[in-house]
Length: 54
Image (cartoon, rainbow, N blue to C red):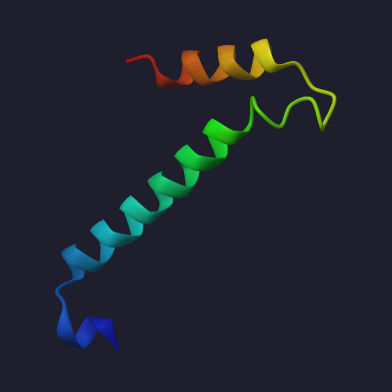
């Protein structure tokens, strides 16, 4: 239905932005929830830092 109102570039941009927001929220919450899952928070933060480097 949106394809009839918006152009395809706008729809794909909205989908990409939505994915990046969800991806960022999950990655931001992961170190805080590491104790619940018995994982290592520094490793989680280190992985996040390595992945965000250019």
